[in-house]
Length: 245
Ligand SMILES: Nc1ncnc2c1ncn2[C@@H]1O[C@H](COP(=O)(O)OP(=O)(O)OP(=O)(O)O)[C@@H](O)[C@H]1O
Image 1 (cartoon, helix red, strand yellow):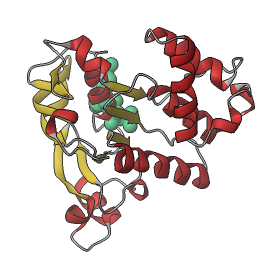
Image 2: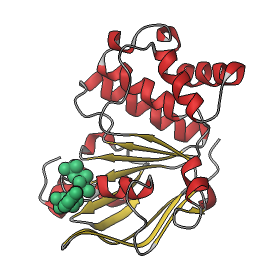
Image 3: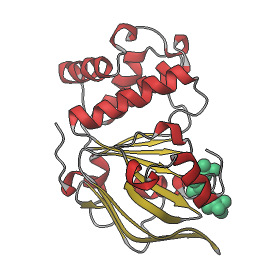
Image 4: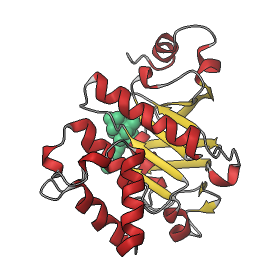
């Protein structure tokens, strides 16, 4: 169920981040409403990974405000991080463990054990179409199913906001389509707020919220259909950034 409340979403106001003299994010401001799927579209070097590192507390909070589900990452980092599920770009499963063991270990890190952990693991795997594979070693899964397992794992602690950093890199077209469909359903049907970083225009649906980030600046924020204005989104993106999509 979509909540559409700002308190369940994400908000950045006036966020600037520098690596020495290099400005990676320049006065970035945007909001993602609760239960929305938002694509963060930007070419290489746009600042997507830096933004994720700030949202996940890996980089110290910069000037400006970053709020996750209403919690300020600077003043209430534990509460903000508890509301966040994250799928990083690099694969992070232990390939020697089964799917279920991978999730059980992660559940334990969140203080979940026993029957409660088992119920949550079953529900998350079911949600991602992975219930049948629970007892297989992660090594036996293809890339798409490994990604789905990581997404299921990111849901175990019941986050309100899900961040995915280029989650389809290296996957074939069918696996990419499956994962984008599953994550769209998490927003549409479960009310999860999703921030999906990508450089691939074809992963963005017309009704999605869209942020185009380029050289650390937000160039557009609206629904994808509004940004495209009847033209092809690829051409609009190319025109704004000079990047092929
Ligand atoms: N540790 C670092 N030290 C110095 N500059 C960095 C560092 N990390 C990133 N940058 C620079 O900051 C800018 C934004 O990089 P970032 O990795 O956030 O972009 P990105 O959109 O994630 O790109 P990609 O898709 O290539 O990962 C780039 O100019 C990059 O070269």
